[in-house]
Image (cartoon, rainbow, N blue to C red; front, side):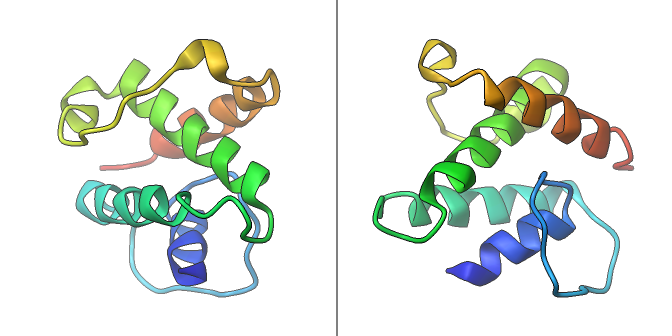
Length: 102
Protein backbone atom coordinates (compact mmCIF):
# COMPACT_ATOMS: atom_id res chain seq x y z
CA UNK A 1 0.00 0.00 0.00
CA UNK A 2 3.05 2.27 0.11
CA UNK A 3 2.53 3.09 -3.55
CA UNK A 4 -0.75 4.87 -2.77
CA UNK A 5 1.17 7.23 -0.46
CA UNK A 6 3.81 7.90 -3.13
CA UNK A 7 1.02 8.57 -5.61
CA UNK A 8 -0.76 10.78 -3.10
CA UNK A 9 2.45 12.80 -2.66
CA UNK A 10 2.63 13.19 -6.45
CA UNK A 11 -1.00 14.35 -6.44
CA UNK A 12 -0.28 17.16 -3.98
CA UNK A 13 -0.36 15.68 -0.49
CA UNK A 14 2.19 17.25 1.87
CA UNK A 15 4.43 14.17 1.87
CA UNK A 16 7.90 13.58 0.52
CA UNK A 17 8.68 10.82 -1.92
CA UNK A 18 11.73 9.81 -3.90
CA UNK A 19 9.63 8.37 -6.71
CA UNK A 20 9.00 10.55 -9.76
CA UNK A 21 5.67 9.84 -11.43
CA UNK A 22 4.58 10.97 -14.87
CA UNK A 23 1.34 12.68 -15.67
CA UNK A 24 -0.62 15.60 -14.40
CA UNK A 25 -2.78 15.41 -11.29
CA UNK A 26 -6.48 14.82 -11.81
CA UNK A 27 -9.47 14.79 -9.51
CA UNK A 28 -10.28 11.19 -10.46
CA UNK A 29 -6.76 10.02 -9.64
CA UNK A 30 -6.84 11.91 -6.34
CA UNK A 31 -10.18 10.41 -5.32
CA UNK A 32 -9.03 6.87 -6.16
CA UNK A 33 -5.82 7.38 -4.23
CA UNK A 34 -7.60 8.82 -1.19
CA UNK A 35 -9.84 5.75 -1.10
CA UNK A 36 -6.77 3.48 -1.10
CA UNK A 37 -5.10 5.60 1.56
CA UNK A 38 -8.21 5.43 3.72
CA UNK A 39 -8.15 1.62 3.52
CA UNK A 40 -4.46 1.52 4.39
CA UNK A 41 -5.09 3.59 7.52
CA UNK A 42 -7.00 0.67 9.00
CA UNK A 43 -3.57 -0.65 10.09
CA UNK A 44 -2.23 1.63 12.85
CA UNK A 45 0.97 -0.45 13.12
CA UNK A 46 2.28 0.63 9.72
CA UNK A 47 5.36 2.87 9.57
CA UNK A 48 4.63 6.61 9.86
CA UNK A 49 0.97 5.95 10.66
CA UNK A 50 0.38 9.27 12.45
CA UNK A 51 2.02 11.31 9.70
CA UNK A 52 0.02 9.52 7.00
CA UNK A 53 -3.21 9.93 8.98
CA UNK A 54 -2.56 13.65 9.45
CA UNK A 55 -1.79 14.12 5.75
CA UNK A 56 -4.94 12.20 4.85
CA UNK A 57 -7.01 14.39 7.18
CA UNK A 58 -5.42 17.54 5.73
CA UNK A 59 -6.25 16.52 2.17
CA UNK A 60 -9.81 15.64 3.16
CA UNK A 61 -10.25 18.90 5.05
CA UNK A 62 -9.01 20.90 2.06
CA UNK A 63 -11.42 19.07 -0.24
CA UNK A 64 -14.36 19.43 2.14
CA UNK A 65 -13.72 23.13 2.70
CA UNK A 66 -12.76 24.32 -0.78
CA UNK A 67 -14.01 21.68 -3.22
CA UNK A 68 -17.39 20.42 -1.92
CA UNK A 69 -18.45 18.87 -5.27
CA UNK A 70 -15.28 16.75 -5.27
CA UNK A 71 -15.60 15.97 -1.54
CA UNK A 72 -19.17 14.77 -2.06
CA UNK A 73 -17.84 11.95 -4.25
CA UNK A 74 -16.12 10.45 -1.21
CA UNK A 75 -18.06 8.68 1.52
CA UNK A 76 -15.83 9.69 4.43
CA UNK A 77 -16.70 11.04 7.85
CA UNK A 78 -14.38 13.78 8.99
CA UNK A 79 -14.17 14.63 12.69
CA UNK A 80 -12.46 18.02 12.68
CA UNK A 81 -12.48 18.23 16.48
CA UNK A 82 -10.29 15.11 16.72
CA UNK A 83 -7.57 16.55 14.49
CA UNK A 84 -4.28 17.63 16.07
CA UNK A 85 -3.08 21.20 15.42
CA UNK A 86 -0.40 20.06 12.97
CA UNK A 87 -3.17 19.02 10.56
CA UNK A 88 -3.99 22.71 10.05
CA UNK A 89 -0.47 23.44 8.77
CA UNK A 90 -0.66 20.43 6.46
CA UNK A 91 -4.12 21.60 5.38
CA UNK A 92 -2.71 24.92 4.16
CA UNK A 93 -0.11 23.07 2.09
CA UNK A 94 -2.72 20.67 0.69
CA UNK A 95 -5.05 23.56 -0.17
CA UNK A 96 -2.29 25.31 -2.11
CA UNK A 97 -1.47 22.13 -4.02
CA UNK A 98 -5.12 21.46 -4.89
CA UNK A 99 -5.43 25.00 -6.28
CA UNK A 100 -3.24 23.90 -9.20
CA UNK A 101 -5.73 21.24 -10.33
CA UNK A 102 -7.57 21.83 -13.60
